Amino acid sequence: MTLGCQMNKSDSERIRTVLEEMGYRPAEEEEADLIGVIACSVRQKAIDKVYARIYKWNRMKSKRSLVTFLTGCVLPADRKNFDKLFDLVFTTNELPELPGMLRQYGVVTSYSSTLRGTGVNTGKSDFPELTDIARDHHKNPEGKDKRNIMDRLWEIQPTYHSDFEAFVPIQNGCDKFCTFCAVPYTRGREVSRSSREILDEVYRLMERKYKSVTLLGQNVNSYGKDKPGQELSFAGLLEEIGKLGERFGNRCWVYFTSPHPRDMKPEVIDVISRYACLAKQIHLPLQSGDDEVLQRMNRKHTLADYREIVHYIRRKLPEATLFTDIIVGFPGETESQFEHTREALNEFMYNMAYIAIYSPRPGTVSARWHDDVPADVKKDRLHRLTADLEKTALQGTLPLLNRKVIVLVTAKDRKAGYLAGHTEGRINVRFPSYDVSLIGRFVSVQITSVTPFSIEGELTNVMEEKWTTAVE
Ligand code: SF4
Image (cartoon, rainbow, N blue to C red; front, top):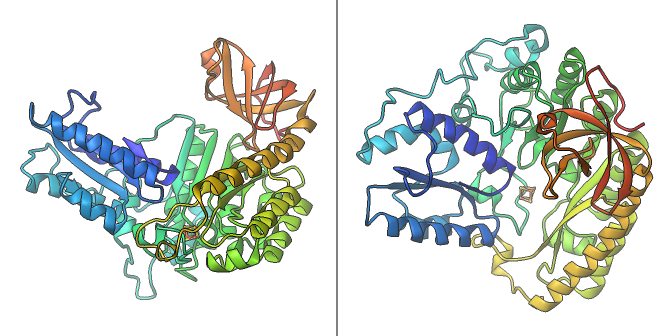
């Protein structure tokens, strides 16, 4: 069970591989011998759900033999409490040790040695001409491998949750220490994955005709900074992925999340503008539109810095959609500071904003400060900002009315007789169809109605041939 973000889902794909290597197979909760949860302390809601689950599982233990484990991004304060409730609590980067831990616990498994050889990293690349730089830099000057514990995790072949969409972790941890955020304490400092391994994984996914690949990291655009001269830069990595896209006919959209505005360099935007497979959708967290609040959040940039990047994105990628994250009710946030956030949201015309009400996370710097914005004020700010967002988002969907858009079909829609998907810019789309064989394929849809966060239309074509534009 995963109770967290895309990074946790990506972790769960590797955990599944490890467990299947050990002989475990998916089972219903009522019949399982081993139950685990991949959770995230970044939101209290997820932690509350973990408590609900473990109390239930511990009641089940009185009737049958059951081993429980917890992993993911768990803060030390939460971990201390969960240690008493779960049989095993371990960090994600301890995952390669899971078979040993279970054996110590008395669980006999068919798994016999280490995790090496489970798939991804065989030491050879499938496309040597593209990865010379990465391979040459992968060893230190003495030629010795510098693989660390995260490398051991990443070399596990994931059991992907889908056969057309995949997450590819490129980096773990964060050095930014925003005062509200638990990530540097749960995931540790920034570590970049080997460029060669990333390119190998993306190559294989494109070869298997995956339609959507999302590069993941807590601070994705600082990729390579911890290993200068050893791995590619983030722009360099995107460039190589762009070339892979060309090689495979640009039939895959490649996304990345989450970047930090401070590291969003013009060369990253330039690369995205040059390659068709690099999706024209940018997620750029704002958090606040007020410089004083940004400073207290330790975001290390000003609103003016942020504005400069948005202007560059608009100039180089005029068709790109813009998504963001915003926190309302940060300690000390005054009404006028909140108004600055509203002004920023209206200025940058976001297509989507994930707006969160501030809640202190134990162990973070801001948790020591007085959480002085009353709950009803926080809620009111959330509602006002959401109303503003609906207006800016509608400005993004209105131009799509009566146009044809390319859509990746991802699932059946909640409305019976409809399929759901999204555009390259991650605008949600639905259209009438019972043909579930279209799930996982690109189709063309003529848009007949729009709302702020979704559009609807009629299927006009199923994409077979090479295509280059996402909107006609
Ligand atoms: S940059 Fe992102 S992950 Fe890193 S501390 Fe700040 S909010 Fe957390």
